[in-house]
Length: 395
Image (cartoon, rainbow, N blue to C red; front, side):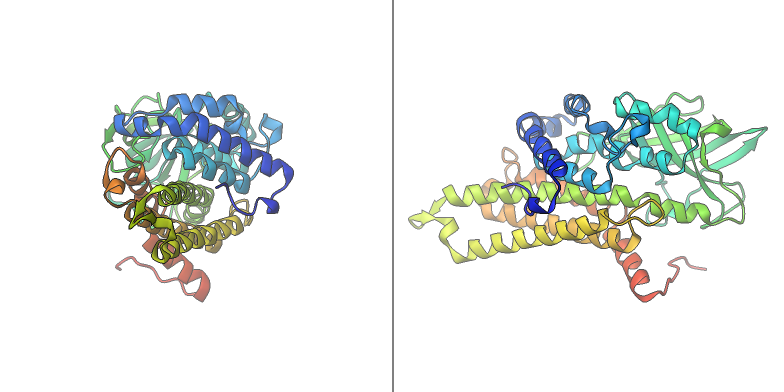
């Protein structure tokens, strides 16, 4: 079972899907359980994807990339996640994270410095936004960028940073001193070897275990002016708007990986239902099982169509807020439902760790938390639909 509606794609897009599908099946899936069990970064997967040119898919052609968009990135991420979500995560930031921000909003010097290394896979990125007190309330961040002569000093703590251990450079969201809320937010590029960054701490997690999340602690870390993407300025809310928009490609990628994992669960469940016999016949012949499979497939197709719509929009260089929020919300929740039903279809085997169903469920469960919780996404959608934006902050 491959991605439906391939006839809606160009020949080049279809070739991209087929190539990602082949790599996922032959190179990623056979090792997925081991990466998960050992909580080990799938470096082998990353190198295979790099060698096949996937790290530079969305980098503009003038910097050596293929210049493709969020839509093509999502096509690839879905296929890779069918084989191994942790492996897909290794290039999510390359395709939909800071390199896209640099290409859209960075200086020419920053583009020349960073983007060719994204293409050849020698520079990896992570986004550092979340803080202990600033999760869903993203504008509550406390990390400050203080002037220091012509340059700056960065101080603060970040947590739950996906891929922190492998990142060479972080896109760090910060604020001007003595500002709060949406006022005075900005973003800078900070290399992992900067003086003032403490050793990175990690925590064990439920799913996506091959790609650890880290805690970053900056103390007066030097930041050169040429590392600034958006300087935090008191009285300006431009950074808060940018913070929301720059996450939309990542949110689309999140939705694509959710769909991919759930698709793997559906495909495995269908194969099992064809082979498993009870009461003298395959369980696939029972209407109750057929209805479950019909609902699972319908949910995935609906999620994919919402995602494809979102990934094809372009508002100031990023996918639209309403379309992206709807796609991620539906894909996250549909993936959990599909994986849960897949466990049920396998019965007790679905609950055993020697089968992949429980891993699929663990992997998708976190996707509705990272990159915007489903609750926050509902708030965003309601604001877009009604035109009424109500602050959740207690005055």
